[in-house]
Length: 276
Image (tube, rainbow, N blue to C red):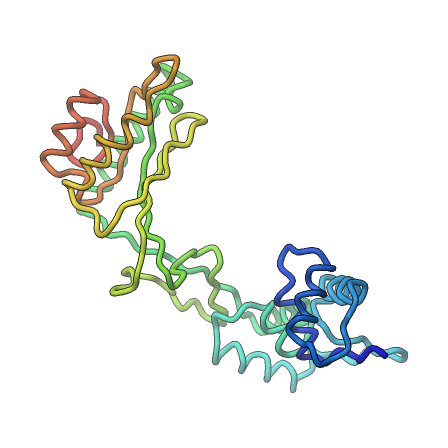
């Protein structure tokens, strides 16, 4: 005889579901709970369908008028919970409280709470605004002369990927009734990370190339010389006309700029370059 799923077990099924099939989810759950009667894939299917529809794993009342969950007592509890953990998602809160995401959003909206997005700060030099204006005017002129101008540029950048998951600002929200001006002024210090270089040239992806340790001018030059530029060779013999990089310190080392002057004379874009 099947055993009714508890609230905690229902939450567990939702959390382990991912993009897998209902049969795989059921098998995974049964393996985690060998002492309880097994569940079927149909049970998983009904539970996930209900969660997607209502935002809750709890059963709705069988009859009578549905009791509102946006009363004063519930509202105070929800706001207190978000005040204590403002970065908690409404999905997680719904799982933990049994309140649908629709009701949670209604409570938050009623009390004028908003999901503020994390802002990443980048240091600007005093002359950066003027340089950006000059570059925009130059790029606009180039586009007017050649509509395919952007397809001739190799756009490049590096990014650190931290073991602790820092930081994709699209997945971070801070619930509050006032703007907390939530910012990330610096990267985590002392955590393990890997740096990845990647470029875009027209419709072609260049790389990715992985960088060990911290990036310095000598290492960046070696990356360009040994990995990046050799990978640009095509059967048609084409090559980017322009090369773009940001203003990271390793990018404007003397040896790096000399190398770029040789490879892209008067046509590389970056700090202290011919095109800034």
